[in-house]
Length: 555
Image 1: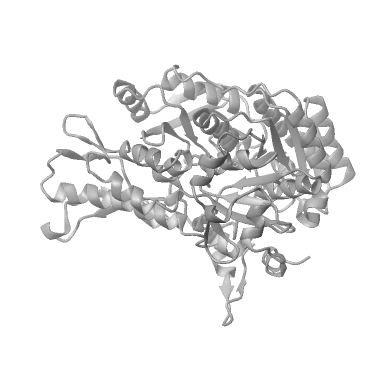
Image 2 (image 1 turned 90 degrees about the vertical axis):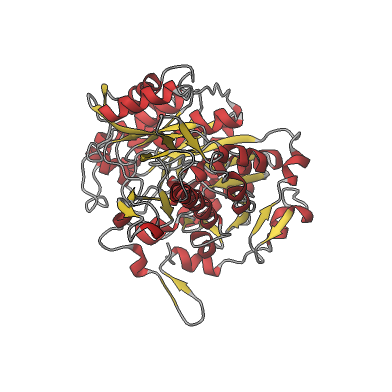
């Protein structure tokens, strides 16, 4: 079989204007980025906002192996399959981040014959959204340090600064640094550090904003530091929100591309549900809902992370009512959850699948806690045996979920027809969607609710720092915000080595951070890092371009 990039390079793409016509987007509502990419003017939403909403399907997954389990691939293939069945379909995806593209993934635009194209552009700089977010965030950081240097009229406590700088690259060396060295002319020395761009509150704000005015209002609320009296200092206090919004004036516009089978796809914002919000933009989803019969979207990593945030944060703020959830599973991930090493996942081992199936059971249970009909999509690999597949099929049946084999990687939309038919059946069932927790609960109670009901934790241990932060945020009036958990994607617990369905564990909460503009509180658990590092052999080593501009190594 051809590699992902070879398949993408052989694709016959339609001009993006033709793709737009499929769902009634007008020429004046397109802002072209070459022949095959366009941004959508926000006037489009104003024109269609009174249309009836489409059915909304969330694609999530079990806890993955390090290679991932094909959630984006399944989302794309399902969208193409629904199009083949005559449904006016749109797909809403997250944008890839350069950090993992150059680090471990080599790309994040689907795979095989279920991809969004042009995949090279999407995986690299695309339309510059990530760079705009990076620039807007770092402008705020620069204005903060400049204010301190220029006399510190706001009496900012340099020992109590929340805002770090960001970069769209994995680079562990930047986690903890010292800035302002070299004398008075170079500013005020202090400890600082970098996060990856996708962990920036600016990213979350872009994804949750309802237009430019709302974007500006949310940016103005970012808490960057505290003054010497313990009062919060915001971006508004630094008069930064106008210039930040200017830098994001185009980034807030959803990006329209296409699948290999020409299904319209909006790719906009939101990677990394392990350390961030992890959902694509609200504007992209809302526009898609007004233009189609059915919308297929995704949220990052497993249902314990991305799906929970989608259902407790995005849907709550956006007034969205999802109609069904698809849980992507693979035999190899179930074997991994059942205790096999990642090097021993190709050989048949029914007993390992049976041991690991508890992970899938928990994710089905979790989606039902939110009141959603569930479809289990088994992303089929060539080496999967009939006996292994049967274990998954029975698990879905016994836990009240539909089941379908998905072969979209090798067959595109044709390989997703079985899944599409099950999804169409699921969306006709009654969705009793409701968030997991009431916002009026205390911060600790909300964290406890997520940890015990979604992760299966027995108890929670809060560090002294976390306890102080909870008390401080509640004192300042932020206690009613939802919680955005930062946790390893490999386990339901905060320990990546506890696979399957761990029980009796204590979730360790190290620290919290306030994202007042985005409208949530980030809760850091275990050893999760907001600036990942590169692996021993980064995927960048395999990525190349020749004299004619032909790219290789993206996958």
